[in-house]
Amino acid sequence: MAPTELLRLASLSLLLALVVQPHEAYGSTRGSFLSNDGSAAVSGICATSVTIHGYKCQEHEVKTKDGYILSMQRIPERRFEGNGNAGTKKQPILIQHGVLVDGMTWLLNSPLQNLPMILADNGFDVWIANTRGTRFCRKHVSLDSAQPEFWNWSWDELVSFDLPAVFDFVFNQTQQKIHYIGHSLGTLIGLASFSEGHQADTLKSAAFLSPIAYLSHMNTALGMVAAKAFVGEITTWFGVAEFNPKGQKASAFLKRLCNYPGVDCYDLLTAITGKNCCLNFSTVDLFIKNEPQSTATKNMVHLAQTVRDGVIAKYNYGRPDYNRMHYGEAKPPVYNISAIPRNLPIFISYGGQDALSDVKDVLLLLDSLKFHDEDKLMVQFIKDYAHADFIMGTNAKDIVYNQVLRFFKNQQ
Image (cartoon, rainbow, N blue to C red; front, side, top):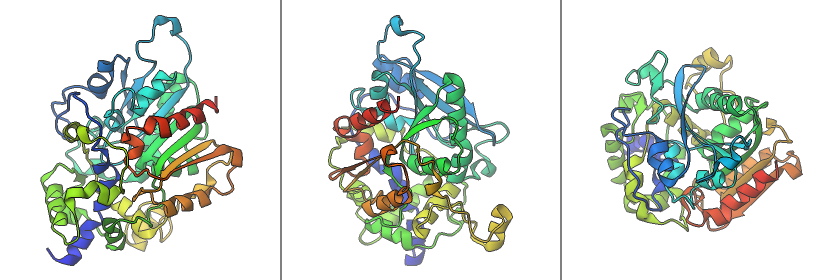
């Protein structure tokens, strides 16, 4: 393969990094699902990963305004909670995963170490979101996931449709404003959505773990190659609108990338995410059984544009006339992060070893929030943490999650 073509393909490498590799961590013997094509799934996330630990769990479906049907899970109470607290109103929390995984990614650790169950045990009403295209979100009111039209979206649509839909659903179910937690891509779509005022009436506060709003300072060799690579119409290489990491064409891409000089696929986790301090790798088999998930190739292109251009902007259609057709201007509009309401309580936690959410990029994000009310912005810096530690770190409860709990309880 010619070096130029490989450089172009490498622009996708960081997208696999955002969540695919970071979750090879703590072990479990829980069951697994089947393929990404939506066929013959054994059971839902509740049955496979929640109720087996003694928690009540509900499966819900949410329809977006553009017709996608999303799966959500609800953990409404503590483990083994008796009827004495029945009817007690609990504060709802919505948790949003990153790219190429689904809500299962929050549940790979033990109940004492994974965030949703920790939140439930501390008296919160926990809702786990899943984005379109993932294993249990492959339904649409009129489209089939085998049709290219089903995959005609990027993270713009997650901002404009998915997140508002799940917020509205949780609010209608609970009649309370909602705390939000995002990791990786979940931070990007949260920041972008809140900057446009989509959840103004339903959002109570937000916690962003390992935020990736800006990506231009990634300090990995793969990241630098991706940032410099030309981002074209990648569907012409893969020939499909769906980017399925388990598919033959995506696998071929990874094999070619691994053959490129200087790319060490034996330690790809560290090479991409930074040196995670606190992972237990016995959960690798569980992760491989359940992840990664499909996304739209257009979404991958949009993320690569975010790296290349160094701004948080809407999808670039590549030609001024195409952009004018969609936006009325030659360049895609920029998401104005500083437009997030200054009195919104925000918690940001980032790590000194994170190669994706680089310290310099987080400082750019904080600069966008420099006029935020000082008493409404809480920032945590963890010197030894990298990207995966925030989700899978064996000590994340003590270092990160207890701070998140304290932050949310202060907003009660």
